[in-house]
Image (cartoon, rainbow, N blue to C red; front, top):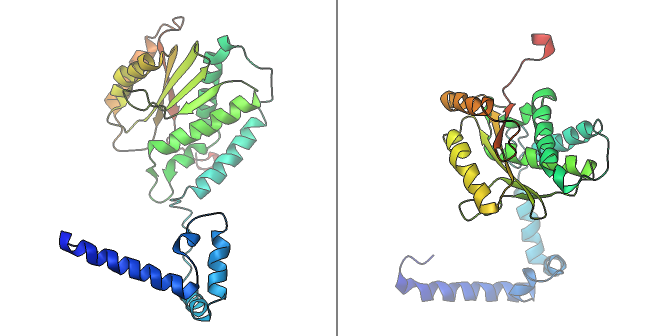
Length: 271
């Protein structure tokens, strides 16, 4: 590592010499190990044809100790995705299939996808996917968005609906969560927020309208996922409920709020 400008040439010389010694030892070229579809075989042959390198490699791997994967923490979302696939498969069995919808039905179809997300969270115990098992700490909004995306895609596919879902589309004023669209005449903008987000009210009052204006959206749906958290914005939640209660249900140009209760609830045996 060069710690000053004067040491750069020394570092370059060292790296070049190291590459040369490695290539000489394995009788190959450096780029062969990093480029091309056959690089795995090149590395394998280099080890097998060099007893010293082979011995060192085997010794290294034998010195490693296995570390079990923490499915409770689930940092790579392996358990999350497995549960998600199982959930979607079970729920869609109840949905059945129907004919393709017309472009005029895009709004209702998008709303139905969001309501299916709500149903899975509230009635199929998938609210558990929103928490780390240790301490019941709520996960980030990314998990809610991924769950909504997968359920929506599966729903639209099962219903044979020709609607495109664009996640994290760049609007020029920020990245919206989702855009459900069919052509240029039907564009539904969806913004998702957890109840502990400090920008909960701002997302509905400012973000969603800005995204709709920039994307020429015909309708906006604000999905609020209520989680167990001591950081919940109770005042903002109350204000949003007031907005929704005053909304004119017949005005298709207005925005809609869908509240999803993802708070932990006791099982039937513990009630």
